[in-house]
Length: 197
Image (cartoon, rainbow, N blue to C red; front, side):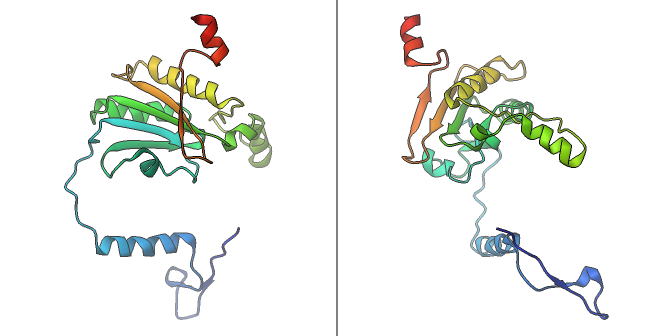
């Protein structure tokens, strides 16, 4: 859906004083913030999460992490990106979260039906063809969500920058049932677990 923003100017108004003739989604969000702020009371918290946990999750609009995990304002740090994958920027955020703000646990949340399962690294080449420059970042597309959770756990556990890597757990959120399924970090399948036993 495309939302058009119209501006009307007259000889008595400069472009900086243009009158908005239609509203955007952002305008609606700013208006909602005004209503929120009218009843807002400073909760008196600092930036340190009460539960000392950082949650890394996909940016998918179907994931309401606070509701799904029973979290309240101030309980955790939430780091979100496309796919919930552990990139250099996620390691940056986790490092600050742990070293400056006291978190100790890391929870990784991927989900079923992720858009990254339908992309490939060709996405970067298509962008290069369109704009004349290849992005420096990787798409981080994947075919097996469980394996991608394992890879993300491994990236966290092996980062030299993180102080706490003993409590790193990964999950897949089912967008149709709302349930989390924990991923075994060491095997690709139940059969693989049996082979290692």
